[in-house]
Image (tube, one colour):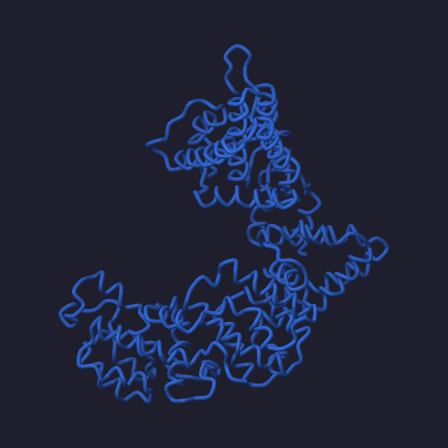
Amino acid sequence: MSQEFSFLNQRLQWIGLGDLLRSHLLKVPPHQRSYAWTKADVEDFWEDLSREKDEGGGEYFMGPIIITSTKPPDPRLTIIDGQQRLATASIMIAVLVSSLIRIGDTDTAQDIERDYLGHKDLRRRMLTPRLILNEEDKQFFTAVVSREKIEEPTTGESKRRIYYAYKYFTDLVEQQRSSSKEQGSFRDWVIDWIEYVREKAIIMLAVIPEESDAFAIFETLNARGRELAIADLLKNHLFSCAGESMDDVRRLWNSASSKISEVDETAITDFLRHYWNSRYTLARQRELYRRFRSQIHDENDSLIFAGELDKAASDYSALLNPGHMIWRELGQKVVDAVFSLFGLRLEQNRPMLLAAMRKLQKSELAILLPWLLSWSVRGVMVGGIGKGKYEVNYANAAIAINNDETSSVTQIFDKLENIIPSDTEFEIAFRTYRPSNNRLAHYILRALERGAQNEIEPYVIPNPDHQELTLEHVLPRNPNRAEWPTFLTDEIIAEYVPRLGNLALVPRILNKSLGNRPFNSKRTVYLDADLKLTKDIANEQDWSPEAIERRQNELSKLALKVWPRIPSV
């Protein structure tokens, strides 16, 4: 851990988000940005808290909040980082207060309002809020948390976002009230929420005397990221359980952390989560701390876990480095497969790979990596590979490997079969596929070319650094419309330029002469390329949307052979 973050750690406290609202008067400084959370942010806030609350009410880590003191007589602390979470929680609490008043429980509503939102002047009944936003949002936000009758703003993007959060929570709470069979159960539901936000929605609070210190720490946290905060939280719990084994636990933790940071200093939390998912139940990043605490209870747990973590860090460092010695020991084909696999930039498979590296025979691991490449390309083409079902299936496969329930590549296939796209799904998706970047397009076209030339395992590409092939758009990105008459509108051009069927590999020495030349001029260059798929383009008399679709349909059939669902051993 850096010296700068160690300094910060001495000034931290772990408290509930609601506790912060209840224990301090807070304000957003005038120069800070206005309320910025989008619909997706607000929905994630509710859904993440709901999932943790409903799955047993465990603690949910919401990241760091940084505040700094102000000079007397101002009693309010200044928020440097944390406005969005605090404002959103306040809006949610205000809606819960309104719902209690609606069912006639004004006493509880007033208690909650006084503790978390502010107190009302006895004469004017105006709310003095516990949280004040900047000048742009101050009045409207106070009206929302005061439960005044408000209408959707016609101006001000931040005000519209505050209003959306208010409406979103109102609809959710009203739905819950309507579905409750009796008022008592709804009242309990509201109180459960208040208590959860107060006690279990945990933040890492840094209270700094000087604003300059606060901004330095803000930069530290944002440069090193939320990931470092979670890693530090887990480390602190591990150390707190270490007892008389503290020296050994600290040594093992530092060793594991060093192995990861030598390759990628930002990857420590990814490593912790992927290792956890390879051995225990699946945990999302925000769930990790609660799951960790449920597993590590005493000195023995702490020492065993730290030792396992240190061993796993050696393997994980290889997952961050395709040139690692581990891969070279498995042979050149594996090295080539790993370079191609890393080029896809997928992380969901890392828990399974960690387990496989630890438990499988080297011969099985050497088979798995090329197979995983083929499966991953299919997933990328069909789409949705970043969704939760992939992470769940890879984690389940990892646990099965670690438990010795799965010990071969064919058994791993059985565990993953439902997320590996079928031939039909793959071919249909391929017909309209647009590579997301040139690196991916280059790999796909090289693999297809190897397939067209009947290479064995064509999807395993030798290191492309030694190849002098460049990517060519047959229809240029900015064509002279008179030279490409079959593309009638800008919309049609935008649709077909990025299609895989419009892309070709051309030797670098030839590509320099192509540029935005018309198709008839390009055809002669394509014929000179010693590449079957590039030469095939020259068979077209004209280049049109129909020609692109025809070529891509042909490539989709070839793709089934290039990236088989069950590769040969």
